[in-house]
Length: 138
Image (cartoon, rainbow, N blue to C red):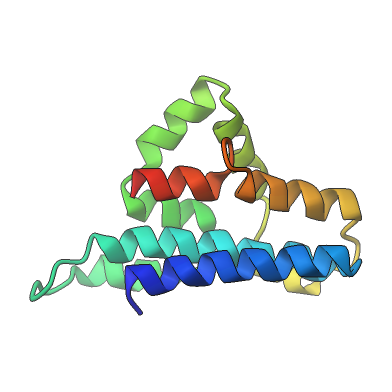
C-alpha cells in the first residue's frame, strides 16, 4: 500500500466509526476509529520510504504493530508530539487520550457513547485532531 492509500483508509475508518456512533454501536466505533489513526501513522512511515532504496529491516519489522506510541516513534514525529504534550496543547492532550486504544479494544463491550465520541473527536477535530496534525506533519 502507498502512503496515499493508507491515508485514504484512515479517513474511511474514521467515517465508518462515525456511522457506528450514530447507530449506537459505541464499542465498534471506538475500536474502528483506533485503526484510523494507526493507518495515518503508517501513511507517515510509508511516505518516508524512498523508491529503489532498500528499507531498514528493523524499521520494517517494527512497523507491523498496532501500538500507536511505537508507530509515532517510527514516524520521526515523537519529539514534536512530546513538545505538544509538554506545552499542554489540545493536540497533545488528544494524543494522550487516543493512546489508551489498542487492538485488544475489539473485545471491549463497556464503551459508552461519551468515550467513543471523545475518541472520534480527538482524532477528527479539524483544528486539534491528531489526524489533521499528522497530515500537516507528514
